[in-house]
Length: 319
Image (cartoon, rainbow, N blue to C red; front, side):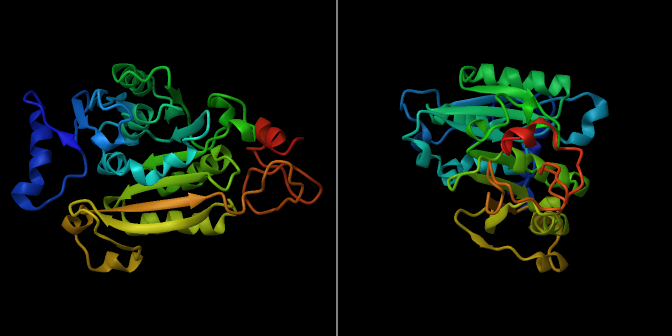
């Protein structure tokens, strides 16, 4: 839930007013360096006396990294935070600890919210290794009192997950991986999928939750879905819905053909909510290998060696 402050940046006020003035839903909710305030739904807080707001500084990356689009808080991040209960994290309430990873976190809204709401969670909040971006993310963690639960980590998609906290073994992989508005660049889809595969724990309870505003483009989202299906990653699309941001509980099935008849105004009203599971990802200890381009298998006599084998593969498969 959003909250405007009296000293908000004029651009923030204009962005938040677009829907009222022109029925033109904003897709970003902040400007670089500004403070963004999010009001937590009371039902999500374990302690009714807990602080009910999250305050975040919006990252202001170096000019050479503006193409990361990390200098705004995007509609998908807010939507993911608003619907955090649908991540079904209560399924882990009986565990001593469960682990959550956010990829492409930006200001870190959804993962900081999770750290505030679940006392037994361990949260890794990651984004591209830009010094200013990671510093702002670390400060947001501290500002919201979750330093003992969450940590900011620089991580470049597709690289070895040993860069993330812990070792790349199944018992320290992640129960839940989340990401908001990270599908906009098709050139990065393969690296992003590799990171999902490498980081997700091999468990029936493990899930990936992706939210993408339709401003991403239907064909771009469809290209990502095609990569999931064809590149041999082993991930399976469990659920795929279009949800209207401006109307509670309004949803419909995904249909790429709608691209032919919708304009920018209509696209801004919707996000795609996608749930993936590990499906046929080969579990640790499995000896059956494939020559498909998963890039997470170790070398054997039948398969060529890929550049991403590294420590992760040997630890995962016990080699």
